[in-house]
Image 1 (tube, one colour):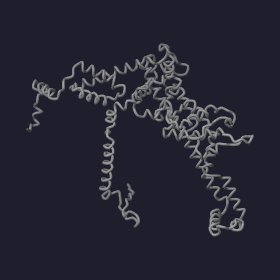
Image 2 (cartoon, one colour; image 1 turned 90 degrees about the vertical axis):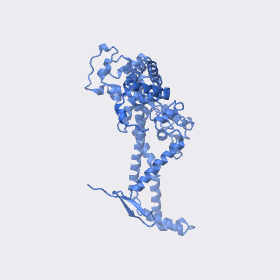
Image 3 (cartoon, rainbow, N blue to C red; image 1 turned 120 degrees about the vertical axis):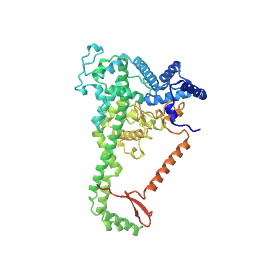
Length: 501
């Protein structure tokens, strides 16, 4: 049966007939109207189940509608629903502030409050605090903690390590926010970061301020830990790049040290090919000269292999400059591994830390130093040197460098992880702890299918559609020229036309 659209315009939505129709529709689909008790239960459900993991209003509204659909309850009006969500968020926040404040000791609160006072200005009694002067923000510790890491330099590594040490000295409990997503805490961290110093000082003794500062420290500690690891990785990469560049320049410079090098090598190969059973003194010496052969040998000995030359350059840079990064790194970073294969590397870091301040250039001869799964095979002989008594011993600086190079590689693939980090955290934490219980919800939030075959089929469909679009549009594309190629190649190739104007 066809109905005229004008019926909707003339329909009285607030009349008695509309109320009867709504009642009939509810009866048909088994839906009932929401009561005050339903709204209270919905608010409690939001506070206890949803808000500890989700706080964004748009998603909260979607979750509420889905909950009402599951319970077969007619949603309230948009305004009433917004007020219900706002009320739930406010109650949850107040409960969150109170619970966090209760877990903080007096010393922790004092350390948090110290972040928003200048040196020598700190006071626990807010009545004794004067209005803050924000003209010199660098004098407040909280402002320094918001700064970036800077370039990969020794000075910046020390500076970032000092910031991390300051946050660690606050002494927040390790499980303070362990069950709360980082993105949830990040909203309070941002609020503390943009809040004026004077406003934070006026409310310094309130649970909300303590929670804001604790969230700021918790989030910043993880971000600064990531910054420090990034700087460490970049420093080792820069050392290698500069070493390779200098060695390559030396090789090019030394290439002309023995004249006619290519011609000499050609003659040697030709003579060996023509006289495979000949005597060296009768075949090779008359051809290229004994002294010139000796010059080639001496040059090869002095120059060594490319890898060894690069490693020696890196060792020199590390020994005389970059070794200063090792102590702050080992003081503030704690490394772990979930793989037993890399436990020797963790043990090697412990040995490096123990003997870092020793005067002896070598490790004790009787010390069992981890080698396998720590030092690459090609460098295991390089780390040994003879001491004054002629004994083969492990040189500490070279061993440290090889350990740090291995650590860099394992950090990048997360075989080694850093305690208190975010990006370099325990890989077991990459998946939410309740993933198995809420698998469908997580997949729905990611707009991904539960079935793997369905996911692969969707990807293949997208790729095929993109390739078809490229194939169909290529001949008519004004910015592409189809040119004939060589006989052995595909008969057509796409060449981009340079655009002007």
